[in-house]
Image (cartoon, rainbow, N blue to C red; front, side, top):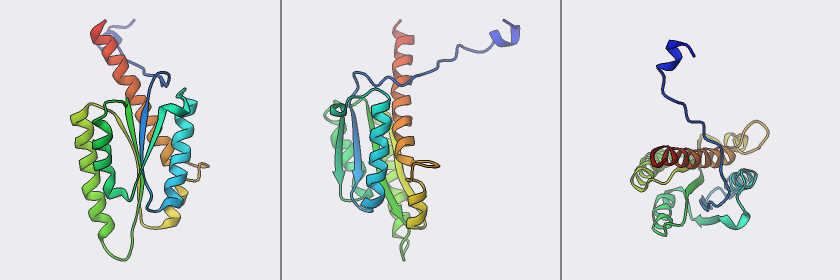
Length: 167
C-alpha cells in the first residue's frame, strides 16, 4: 500500500440488506396515475433487495402536503428501518405547487434527521404531466425505484456504521 493510500480512512461499502427489515411507503393519491407507477417501482426495488412483500407497509395520503404528517405518525410506531416517500407535484396555473414543495422537503429532512430513520424521497416536482411520466416510465429512470434504493442503501450504511462502532 502506498503512503498516500494509507492516509485515507477505511472506506465502508454498504450493500442492500433487505432481509429482516420493514419499510414504510407513504404515497400520495393526488396525481395517482404517476404515484402508482412510483409505488410499483419502489416495491419492485424492495423485493429485489430481499424484503418480503409483508415487510413493505404502504400508507396512502391525500396529497404531497400530507406526507410529512403521515411520516411522523408512522415513525412513532418505531417499526420501520426506512421510509420511502412518493408523490407528484405538477405545476398548475398558479404558484401553489411551489409552496407545497417548499414546505414538504424541509419538513421531511427535519423529520428524518430528528428520527435517525433514513428516507428515500421520490416526490417529483415537474412542470408538466409528461415530464412526470418520463420519470416513472422505468425505461430511462424511475424515481420510485431510485427512492427505494436510496433508503435501503442508507439503512445498510447505518448498519455498517453501527457494526463499526460497536465492534
